[in-house]
Amino acid sequence: MRSARICARTPAEGLAENTARRRCGIAKQFFRAAVRRGHVTTNPFDGLPTLVRENPKRFHFVTREESEAVLAACSDAE
Image (cartoon, rainbow, N blue to C red; front, side, top):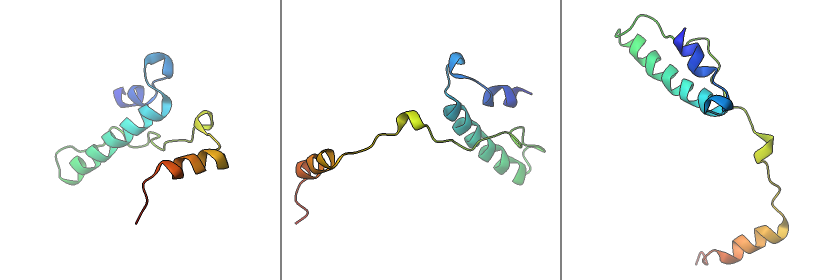
């Protein structure tokens, strides 16, 4: 099934796993609406994983000093 191949792409094929899942989620929503409206009979993306997972490599602890520097750079709310 072509939809399964699209959602199973790996970073070596040009898409990160979460990017592929996000795009499959959009396609899944599109086809769900098409099924409801009677334009197609089945959703080829049903049953495929579309939940985006957290990426621990992107986690960053913000120090007190960094927080204070950001707040100092902001304009006054008043």
